[in-house]
Image (cartoon, rainbow, N blue to C red; front, side, top):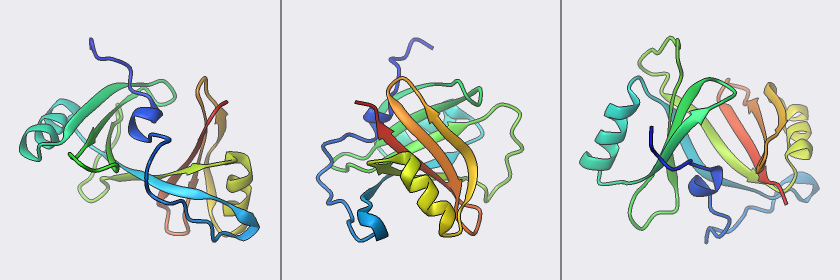
Length: 152
């Protein structure tokens, strides 16, 4: 691909100016940071969002866990990121474009347990990656939520 590797920190900088919501039981702090959508053709989608919507292209890379690809774009002056996800052999159907909502957490394992007790279901267990701890749960309607924290 010849692209620089994209990291979650590209899509979700720790220095976001938005205030974290601190109203969850147990003193949880979670901050909504980006939206991931599923696309059929990564190159076409990058070109559309970059050229037609004049979004800044942040980069793209392979997702080892799924064999798919991820790319990120951001509108000028915005801190919110649009993440494009393309999966091999996926049965893409119109209307299924929302891939996941992402939340930065202080403690992914604690938040995963809390959300499971609140009615979420586990989509993918907690993974410790080189730079991040990540888990995925589904909300009661089946929408995937990514929980992540930077490793220190």
